[in-house]
Image 1 (tube, one colour):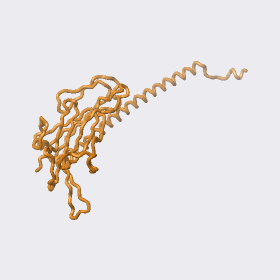
Image 2: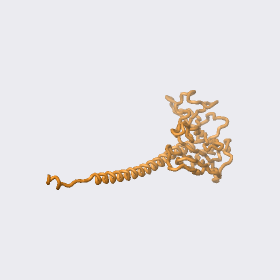
Image 3: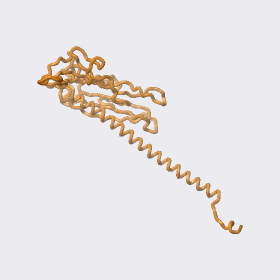
Image 4: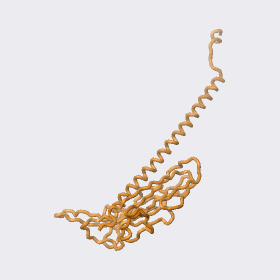
Length: 263
């Protein structure tokens, strides 16, 4: 009994103090983890928006540069209202559309000497309301999706994929969603905005540069607080404002038209 009385230990109060300290440390670690994870998610969301914007604008620049191209020996019939670059303004919604027309050729099979078949194609970029449903509101999100189509001129009309065996044409292929604005501004050789936008071949040939702005919206909520945030639109004096928690970033590029006005 004397030996047992000399053994030391911890009291219940000391154990409780240890538990409390451990819980405080774990809570601090959890808060730190949430802060780091939130910052990491924001960085990833911003990077995704930037990368998606660059991918779409790269595609647009390539097709804008191709607009108006025709081979010198191409004598195929073109549409009577042939316009290499036709911009259709949105009328206030902030999402324009553009039609880009150019010529191409295919080599005929098993023919010597080589012979080519010439074709006129039209590429269209247009916006349609996003079909994505917001989990909170159960309604479609306030954004657009960009669709791309490619049609073929058969000499009398534009042919859709269902009317042709040409595997180079397609219709309403979605290329990106969560788009807030898509704006095209035609610029002449003096660097001035062409207003109104060209609607004829001669007027279209004056387009030397097309300024393109695409703004993307984050897929998830980005900010902690919901408040009104102004957003500047390309070529417009007034700002738009959105009162929510989503991040919006814009990418503006200039696409030089290499084939416009060539004889």
